[in-house]
Image (cartoon, rainbow, N blue to C red; front, side, top):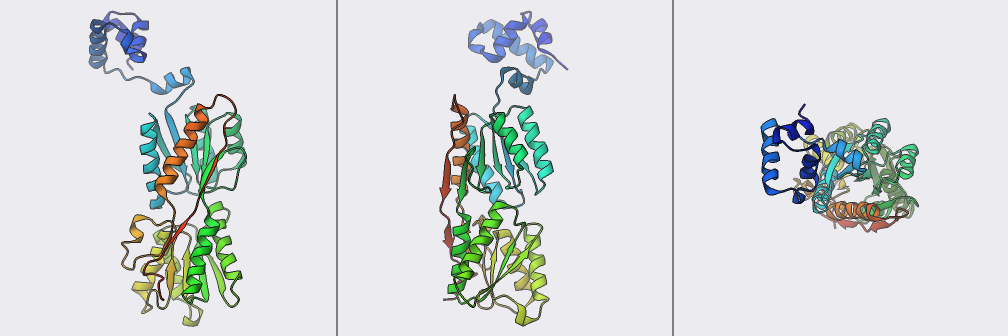
Length: 335
């Protein structure tokens, strides 16, 4: 491996001059710059940025931990984060926990060892010991959407309880009386809040029933599986309304219903999703959904990390709560 010493020997300068060229090139004479630049190109020298950052105690890497990257919502949030990070001279590193707290813990330990600029957590699965590690090491950390209120970390979130309550109230207003909530693990904060909001809406309307159908994943494939299970029931046991924990699940259910039965959407089964991903409005039956502003999520999370990193004293804690918006389309609109 080519070292900075090799570059110095080829350019006939000191190691200190090469270091100055790499860190403060404006302080190096033009002729010397040319010689060092040519030596770097001739030798194929590549700077070890990670080692430099560890020595300097700084980093330009911002880590984003998503719950799952097969959900287009997280991809859109990451895109907004990347653009905001670039504006701040940062590089975004994206990983997914895929619902595995052990794997996420390994990622967080790696981020701490590398002294990353900051961490944005959106998995909802982070264990207390990893949160404590980030806090005690003073790593600027922001919780996105998937956690309860925290006095130690800044956060940006949508009121998932309110969003789910509005979605189910809409189904009830459309005449649904047997509603199925299709979602993932309730230990994930954002899922449990959506279920809690759905139950609140149903509890306020006597005669309306709520069935909870858990899923291991929150993908289109998982929605297809649930749809096929529902179609395997006796017709009298079918729900007349479905509220899915995200749009991918909702579209999978609609695909199963449309291709495997003579049921009509929304006349026989009304469907509402969550997130308002790009595909929701362009589905064969445009999907009603609860919109979460992806661009706002991405920008505000990076800004909160930046605020913490700029603080010279205790890390400032700020919470941004965004109100959800119910978007009514053909999949649920009966009246």
